[in-house]
Image (cartoon, rainbow, N blue to C red; front, side, top):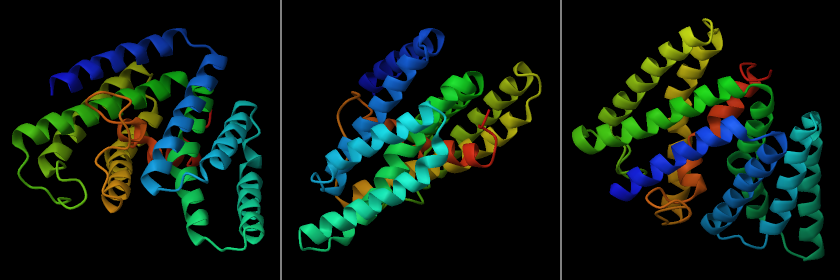
Length: 253
């Protein structure tokens, strides 16, 4: 608990410093690094390390497309990746269906969310910052409320620590923060959608990563952040949240 709190404080200070002083180049390097670390963690979860370096190259390409506002090429690049995997399977004289499934996991969980976050850091830093604060509040209040008051645990097999009480506590914190941001950002309707998305999609991302870890019998995705686990453990709330808000038009500048 103490280590988790200390790490949380450090992460908060780092996030504030990053948002105040990082430029576009630093942001691009940082979020690409987050993606690459997530790729390494996901490769350990999936047990497919041979695909790792191909995915790292794909990560660099997609981050570059977002950075240079060429993200409309992402779909062709993604399909070309499938074609290259198909050619690789033919050359190796083996058909490994898991390669295609794993490519989708890497794309959804490790590449797309953080490449979008980098683009949003450049174009909509204030709104992105508000969302990050709300996610942090949700995670923290859900954790502490669940530890202290949690009794009903509907996802015991997937995530034993998740409780109804924790979800309610985290959701109330997000609603309160959303009201504050709504007034401070000149009554922006985007905050309303952000609050709805954080309450519904942040837990969905968290549970999705938990499912992958439970299937592979892994407790944490990594050990990079003391008390929190790895990048995927800390950032799993964003994997559905950020792309959803982006593609429905809330986070598109």
